[in-house]
Image (tube, rainbow, N blue to C red):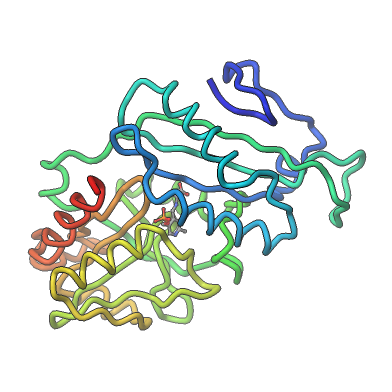
Length: 277
Ligand code: PDD
């Protein structure tokens, strides 16, 4: 069962107009929200970010908080597993003709929930690989837009190179991953790119920073260059569906001799506690 414009219907019965600007232009925004043990995790933070994305592209939020909560909870209780990933997207809606500029339309709202399959403890203990690439995305990466062509190209490169993530750099400084935020540990301090228009302000990013402080680490939200990434003591990525994951090779170069770092373990364990709060 999925939600589309007021109806809960079978996924194969859900359809939208070919004139929908989401279809024609990728003119819309989205959120991915994790669900643990049937409870939606950090909903307020996700809906606040959704509001910011909508405001940035001049779409009026079609629902109030409680209406979102009702829709999301209905889908959660209809999905078989306790841990899930909610996907919601709002497009500007369907116009009568294709033109770049827009009028005020009725937004299209689509929501689905799927089982969340986290990495196993054994996979996490092994660590993951990443490659680096120049960040070719536009300059408003803070908007969680459905137009994701560059991210799709990176995902395909990751698949071809059999790596978990592509880590991006703009003007020589690491911004974030193609679908995640990036952190390094250097000399006992955690570094990550500051929020702003060049990264998505990850909900998980905030929780990683909170966990790192709880683990006694210094946190420094400052950009760092590609070389510093490759010579870091630890590298991690974070997102709602991946939580916080250790990266142990970058461009085939081992990080921390290819071993998962102990600071990652502390942050990971703290994050697991936050999930149960
Ligand atoms: N992506 N940066 C980018 C470019 C992302 O696409 C994501 C998440 C993040 C992490 O944000 P958060 O912690 O709020 O999930 C950072 C989601 C999961 C996706 O596109 O599926």
